[in-house]
Image 1 (cartoon, one colour):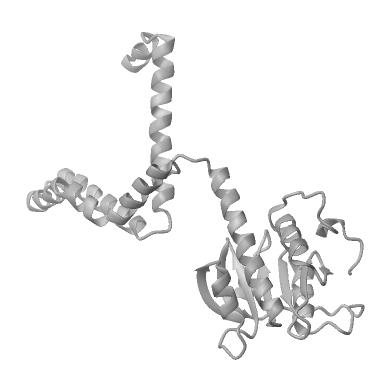
Image 2 (image 1 turned 90 degrees about the vertical axis):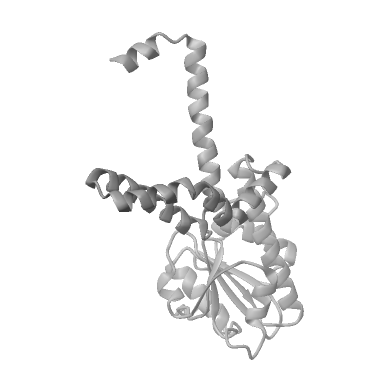
Length: 276
């Protein structure tokens, strides 16, 4: 076993160095994959693998002409990769220059959470002041695909400007709910199930009943902005918390969505004993 003999001949320091070397290579590949994930480069990468597979296949089958063509593609492939992947390479170099290429994923998750909370806070504050009715549901563990199918597919990034624009009165998408799935706006104009609970306050309208209804059958969080009063509410686990200030809204949304424990958060969802 030459490989085993080679390993046994290495000193402990050399073994550690080789292990670190392999781990660093895998880490670099992992970071590169995360950079191109969700971009058109993924499809281009699949095309490169198809070409490499075709090159090996032509060698095995003895197809000389096709083999020569594949060889030319491979020879000039390096230059083609630089041209095709130019946006991704530039983005990677920019992140490297900012020191963000090898930043921890936890840091990126915290940044994304802060960005989402800020986007919702800005949009809800804007709509509440102007009494623009809004209904926004956030998917957690229970899938909301059946409700997403009732609306208009969007698959867009969450921004305060887009959320506000969706709910501007008399626009095609303002009537219905926006559903957030995997930190993206999956669809707008969606229909949610209305709660049939007879104990819900009579002053609550269709938006609030739909928000409560969805929370009764799923673990989703729903944001409601009243068109009549501009009041902001959150629903989860069949409960509704109404008339939230923007500070309370941001704290409770963060806690209910991401499970961040804020001790000074009033009435966290999983501690409520009754509707308010």
